[in-house]
Length: 117
Image 1: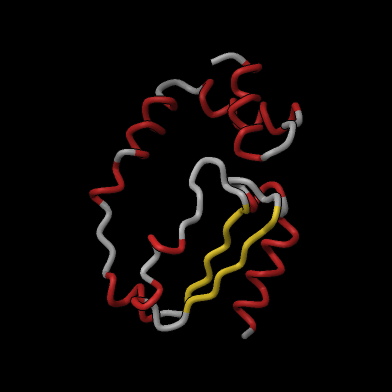
Image 2: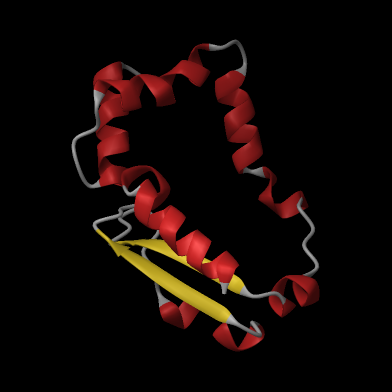
C-alpha cells in the first residue's frame, strides 16, 4: 500500500486529514519483514482469546467511543448493558475510530475520572 492510500485509510478513521507523521507512524511497522502477515494473523486470533465473562462483567467498566465511528458504529442495542454491574459510557464527538489518538487529552481525562471515582 502506498503512502497516499495509507493516508486515506487513516483519514477515514480520524475523520480529518492525517498528518505526515501519523501516516509514517502507521506505515513504519509494515516495512518490517513479516509484520503485515503478523498483524493480519493477530487480527484473526480473536476467537482463541479466552475471557472469563463473569469476572469481566463484575468489574466497573468504562467504554470510550468516538462519535461518529465510521469503522465500527456504536449501537446500544448490541451492548448487553444488563450484564455489567457498573458500566460508564463516554462518547467523544468528532473522535472517529481512534479517539485515543485524535483527542488524547479528553480520553485521558475520562480515564482519570473513572479511576479516581
